[in-house]
Image 1 (cartoon, rainbow, N blue to C red):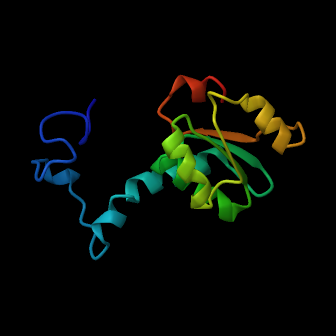
Image 2: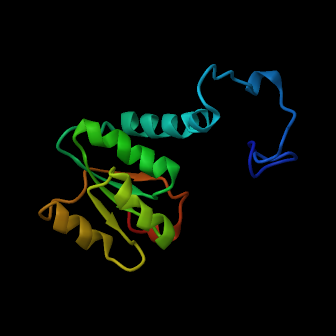
Length: 142
């Protein structure tokens, strides 16, 4: 299985690539930088629907890349408290300024169970999302 980006000739950052017509979807007047986020946003929306996350719950989102931040952003209006965890310091440092998470933690340096317990009065998280691509420090604690 492959997809445009890391697989096959052309890659996602090339000036041009050749693909079958069925894989081309017009985005109309949406600016390209916003259009590029549509797929990541849909991943977040689908995950939240599948998890049935709802108001008053606590969610742990593993990964503060585009999908993780969008997942946290889509949980916010639903009234879900979000604990965002990120391995990489540079990415993690940007997460608080995004305004989408209630708590940002480092799963390498911190005990995630203790962080979650502290922010849930010991009850634990209701749902968890892996937006880190299965990185062991994140998944091992989810």
